[in-house]
Amino acid sequence: MKIVSTIEEVRNQVKEWRKEGQKIGFVPTMGYLHEGHMSLIDAAGENDKVVVSIFVNPMQFGPNEDLASYPRDLEHDAAMCEAHGVDLIFHPTPEEMYGESFYSYVDMNVLTQELCGLSRPVHFRGVCTVVAKLFNIVTPDKAYFGQKDAQQLAIIKRMVKDLNMPLQIVGCPIVREEDGLAKSSRNTYLSKEERKAALVLSRSIFLGKEMVEKGERDAKKVITAMTAEIEKEPLAKIDYVKMVDLETMQQVETIEGGILTAIAVYIGKTRLIDNFMFGLGK
Ligand code: PAF
Picture 1: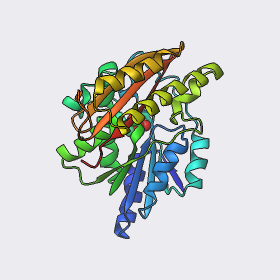
Picture 2 (picture 1 turned 180 degrees about the vertical axis):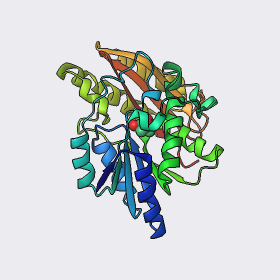
Picture 3 (picture 1 turned 90 degrees about the vertical axis):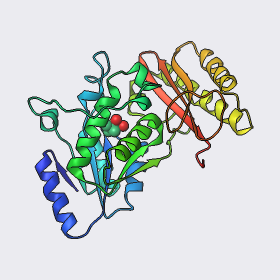
Picture 4 (picture 1 turned 45 degrees about the horizontal axis):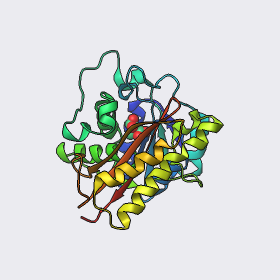
């Protein structure tokens, strides 16, 4: 496994693989890897070569967010990647990615105007821009994203479609801790007490999912029950509990077709997200 930090090194390696007719799978990450990331890497193993990027992208953090404190551990990440058969890690500096000045952005309407797009106004512009750049650098055949960031996944799929990017986007299921908490690099911010309190997210998700699976079709009833469950936990502060159309990310009143039920909840100062999807086979 190679670890490189320049765009030129990635391009040279990919050029060699392409000459040999190798297919490339790509997993973009911000590092501090956990089993959720490993499930993406394992899925990318269906290609001949697997590239992982590790880059804490300043452009997708708002001014009062956790860019400075975002956890980083390249040595640990490299060991995990090696153990899962990764061929190349791209670990650039912000200067390598954005140079001394940077004026071009990839932005998106509609899909970014709900859920995390409301509470994190610059976030998806930063995500789309960096992911488009990474796709241009790595030129993968397939790229793998987690369904935990369901809005991000929908946005990336739409960007690829709208801008005719020549690759396939693969969404992979949420990976959870044994007690239900969705895996996230941000779980590391939680104190022991907060870690326990954070279980309210998955409890609320499982409750909503069960209601929908048992036939409830009134979005408001599901959201009310999920909200009440979260409000039982004194350390939790709701950012949103919403049900949206899976393709447009616009709120729905009735559950039909593909829907995404997504929540964002502060546990102390840590903002965590979770979701469930229903009716994917539309
Ligand atoms: O999901 C993430 O970790 C990031 O948003 C991504 C896709 C790597 C872009 O920085």
